[in-house]
Length: 162
Image (tube, rainbow, N blue to C red; front, side):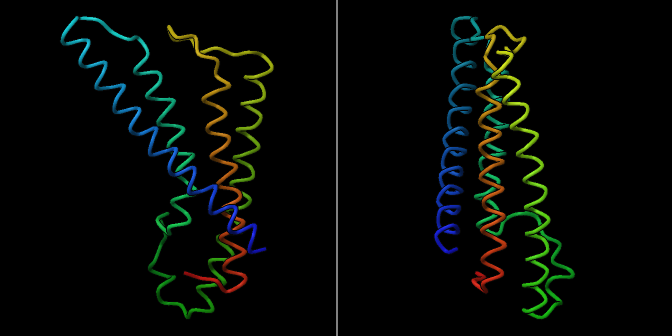
């Protein structure tokens, strides 16, 4: 079980790093667009579209990293008033709910990604991007989140709380 936990944590860390790199890429893309507009009066025609793709990928890919670092939103009002044993049980319950939610999310995003692959769906923007690529990033992030919720729940069950 501990190897599952370690693997999920490594994947979440990888997702966090990729999300960070996408943030840098988005910033560079926007700065490049601003520069060529100001200097040459030209446009790449893709900045708005790709910034959106990168932002969606960042959200999904960073979600598991955020969970592993206890930065997801929690309602501490109740939890902080509980004994450590009840906190652990509440965390396990929240983890189980997270597993169900992230499994449903992963299934929906897999379905969307699969359809985009099968039908070779393109964006309606000038780039005509194959949508399987941005959809795949969201699906990968949701799958990593699913594994991280399993890891989170196992850690609480085993008593390996942070």
